[in-house]
Amino acid sequence: MSSSSALLAQLIDALRCLPGIGPRSASRIAYHLLGRDRDGARRLSDALRDAAERVGHCERCRNFSETPLRPVCSDARRSGDTLCVVENPAQLAAIDQATHFRGVYHVLMGRLSPLDGIGPEELGLDRLEERLREGQVRELIIAVSATVEGEVTAHYLNEMARALNIRVTRLAQGVPMGGELEALDSGTLTQAFELRRDY
Image 1 (cartoon, rainbow, N blue to C red):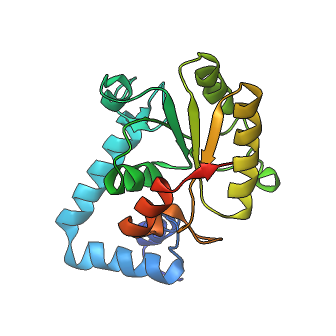
Image 2: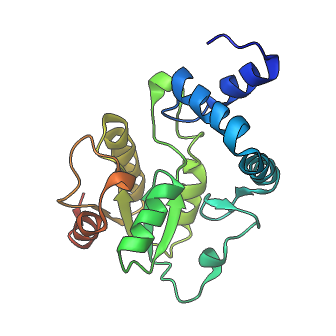
């Protein structure tokens, strides 16, 4: 999209890094921020800069964190013998809000996709295997999306846990094939979580 301003064009191009934002949406957002909400644009800029500089990953679960260890990972009220593996922080938040799960998590930050160059190393599966080898985990809950990549990831996780004699379960009915966990309503997600099955 042509623009008379190089800075405006740069902003539009930068906004296109967001998922689902194409050239038209990026233009609308840029025009709105500059035309009607300059204060919002400044707050957005400050928040993005601060988050990019200060938010890292928890050393234990790999979720986003401003500290080396998230408080939930050191919470003695959480049961360390049940570990739920999710693809991303949005899935963790969805499960935590919709269920009564009191175990611990491991966030992959993606799913296995050899065609895209995403292998076990990129997902921190070596760190997950270390956690499993510590001997505290008795059940590994696989809570990944029912996509082709999700199935490949689930199979890999199943093989890893079974080799260590750890029970493996998978979310049950209610999760449609091809569905994304974070898009499910809380009732469906609760049912899927409560009725998980051996994998």
